[in-house]
Length: 268
Ligand SMILES: NC(=O)c1ccc[n+]([C@@H]2O[C@H](COP(=O)([O-])OP(=O)(O)OC[C@H]3O[C@@H](n4cnc5c(N)ncnc54)[C@H](OP(=O)(O)O)[C@@H]3O)[C@@H](O)[C@H]2O)c1
Image (cartoon, rainbow, N blue to C red; front, side):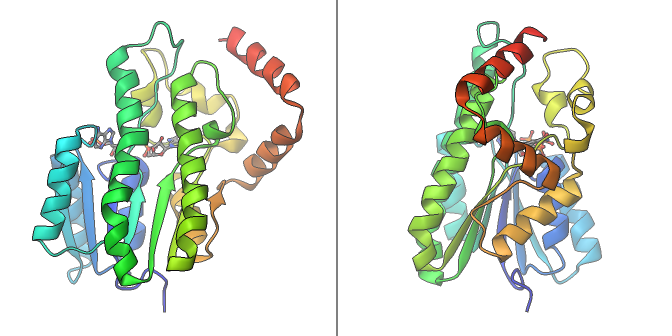
């Protein structure tokens, strides 16, 4: 039986990019999908598409700004009222901001902290108790290779993803004996709307031109994330070449890495 057969999956950030792709790849197997993001029209369009292809699939949409603690609590109440027991949580919603920290907009910085860290942690805390009762469940946290290095010009974003990877690794150890698999999915650049949102003006395509061999499609990234859950891997970097590059970079003494990062920062 497919690992995801009959699951109830909650996907945050399902209105575009990786979130929408998670929904499409899980739809043939899941019993129910709960799609969350702010743009309800996008969620409804995806739900209609999936219901058209998989009439037996129960697709629910919930429009919420996950940066808002009250909305997260109301969402948990809604899940309980609807008797929806989530057994696969995909914490995918996230945003970046590319540019110098000092010239960034505080609202954007706060949104990154609220969505990438606080909402991910809060939703996990709200849903794990139900998962513990079911005895077999999974959590996939969408992190980034940016979490492995303190990236200048993405200082806050890369710090939020360092948190996501660290949190996921610790939780994977805590929850494995209780039947819950936790994985951190750490992609490099993926062709979604992410850089359109993260780029402060300018051309988002620059981000894909620097290292074209590291760029992955949403389809491949999502497939790698689902495989990691299936095989109980705590962490996955979807592109093998990128995984090798990260392994090499992590083996280099940090003072050299710091030099390389300084050079990169100055060149932007
Ligand atoms: N694309 C990349 O290069 C890349 C690389 C590494 C990691 N990632 C990570 O992958 C994840 C998915 O990003 P993506 O590439 O698919 O980018 P995307 O196309 O921009 O999707 C981001 C999703 O997050 C949702 N979101 C953002 N703020 C939200 C909020 N306040 N409340 C609720 N939902 C919110 C957006 O929905 P609404 O705007 O409708 O709310 C959207 O559905 C993120 O965690 C990102 O950090 C991406």
